[in-house]
Image (cartoon, rainbow, N blue to C red; front, side):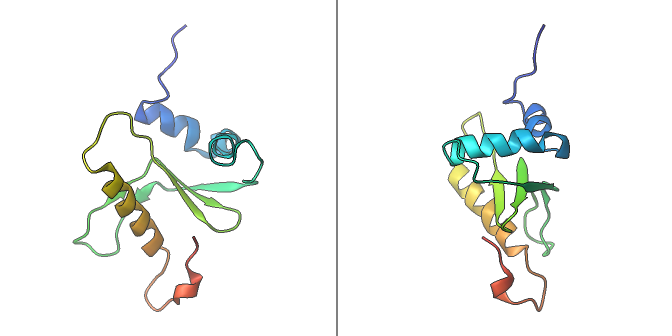
Length: 113
């Protein structure tokens, strides 16, 4: 029997990016981020499409974007092949996800980590 490689984008999203796999994602994140401690109790999988509110800015797609129970946003990127300026891509996606939390007129204290 052959299994699909979890490093393939489609497989990664199927394993970690759907409501059906929420418990697997929670376990995975707790294992790699919190040394197996059950720190993440719950999360919500949200649309990985990260459109910008300003038409001229680049649209991005995230592998997994999750909102934790405390309101913080977790962005999970899977990158197998070397990529030029990967750190800059991560910073761009992170800053966009952070900024897209607020609509015009909303106050900055509403931003979640």
